[in-house]
Length: 281
Image (cartoon, rainbow, N blue to C red; front, side, top):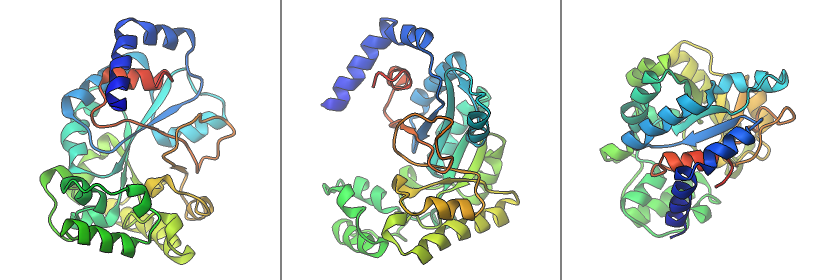
């Protein structure tokens, strides 16, 4: 119900011209980093048309330098995707390429390499009503045990097409549009594993991606955005910057390893995107 009300409000604000007025009178001086997972093709195409016409879209990798030099243009946006779903290739890549908009996809190495059935997707697929925030406090092993018991599906089961991940050949192909970043090896919430395991996930995913793609990997996304005690590990591993899932302003003083993002849901239309970018939602 709350989501429906937000969509209705966004459409009213958009159709009335209030959003465009707010954007023009009070242009954002802080870059907004958008966070997607899976997208709907037609909705995403319209969103990219809107961004191309109304915003300066830059690569995530450029944001730390632009912030440091105080060279961010008004209404600047970066586009990011988490996990590396096949959906990103089928539904997002064509629109990004058509409008010549750069983006970043953060790849979970094991999920891509083995096309695993992620635990959160198994819960959605089987419509299990369990609080995911509770599960996220558990160790990766405990999460798997509970999700497998609830869904009768395992990590190694073949996922339906909706939940499938890109393969390496596809990831290599999309590099004309997407920068590739690391989202760890196996997507553990890094604050729930030991320092040793966290460091391995951060460093080994970088090494594997660089080996497979034959290029430097400098961008990182914390699974679920949990970063406490892990940002220094990311910096020491040789990354250039990292993103979290919390919203907020990115300023010259923002730690480049704690860049904030604004989440965009798969069902958000152009009006909702516009309202979120204008700070009205």
